[in-house]
Image 1: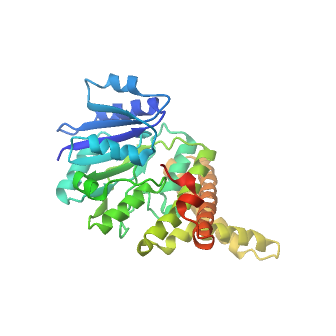
Image 2: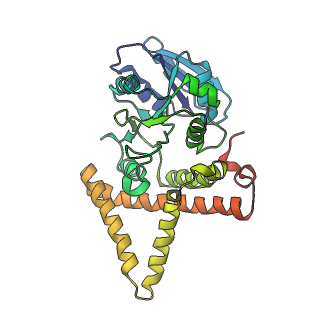
Length: 331
């Protein structure tokens, strides 16, 4: 197979430098292509790309800002390969990555795959805590991590592969953001394509965000899910309500403390103790354990609030998603 890496970038020249350097260090025996799509940046990375012109088979395109989904489609339309690997610009790729992808595809071919993410030792404590929150089975059930026990894995666009055949059949990513990756995955399923998790094809995902940006991100994740449930009701699951229900549970348990009912509150405390222990065990640092509790509370609050707002606008107010939540769509 001929592989093309597709990388949209927006005002992140330093990030793309690290990513390209890691791609240059791949131990894959065959050649591969890199396609960088500058999504209307005001701080461009063209000077970074020039550093790698003679080191990688690399192409650079600049286009008007239209969002990451449309930029990925643009890159795939201009790529030469027959299998596209989509990465976020804030990723660093381990040297065996492409070798692992090729091994998986040769052993059991699928037209779309996804891989997990991990944190480097050089990442900040907040980045490591957010990574645990976004990938732990205790917080997301493994849907963004490396769980192989999922009946249908939904690849995420920070580390995702799709064949040229599947891209052309599906027309690629839609205008919703975030949520464009599960939207594409569901459409691929409906077209008869299969998806699979490649556990060893992981990337180091920096998640270049602070607490405020993390809240904004998960809040939009929460808003996106009811939109997708409305579009594809046959793929809606009760588990998508869990962050919202847990948020309500926490509020109720605190309220009941005023009536001297403590059981629910202490069950919640036990959950966060488990999360704390998991984080400390994984990162060997007590501080990250406490930061993971903070990031998990932000995740539940941000996602839960977004989910409730989106559900109310769609189900009660009967608003069209593009009208009620225009911030969720690129034109």
